[in-house]
Image 1 (cartoon, each protein chain N blue to C red):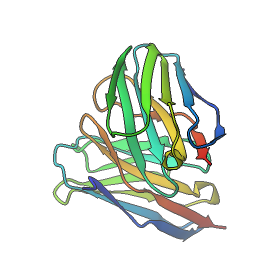
Image 2: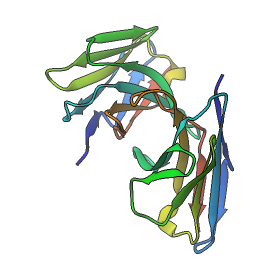
Image 3: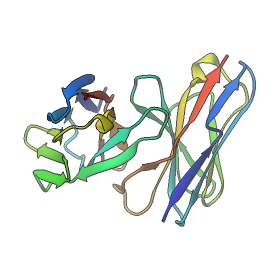
Length: 109
Length: 113
């Protein structure tokens, strides 16, 4: 059973647009939700993370929105840039990390 | 600051050959260490994790094994590789509580031919 479901699988956004990636989870015991960014041939790098006691966290152009009742969280990338083109993974954790299947983002110049 | 090293970056091995991938972490003590595998276009599958020297937990029964001979060294091994062992292998570390963030190395691309 997939613990964390991520969508879309791929996303194309114009430069300057907003990229939105969504994740849903079932296990209400999860209490830490990080997002990772991965460039080709590299390991995933921690981008931003949130805990369920807050509904939103913003770091620069990256924002996590968290809806505890709906068991959903999303990553918003404002003013998307070609350099943001990468694969993004959401994750949820309670003693162990469960990763989404990834979203390949392509930002067109 | 903490850094993680993985080597080799790429590896091509024939079926039936042994495997040894190494990972070391610098700048921290007693880290939790992890081995993940990432299939092409897929998510991350946890293979092994370790909370201390000689302590290894296996998540998935398979052709691989892991060892932690030193505090900041984690080794992934196989006695005989299978075609299905091909993939991108990632080492990761964390310190602190159970929900401390994972930090990944740059991985090893393994191709079994």
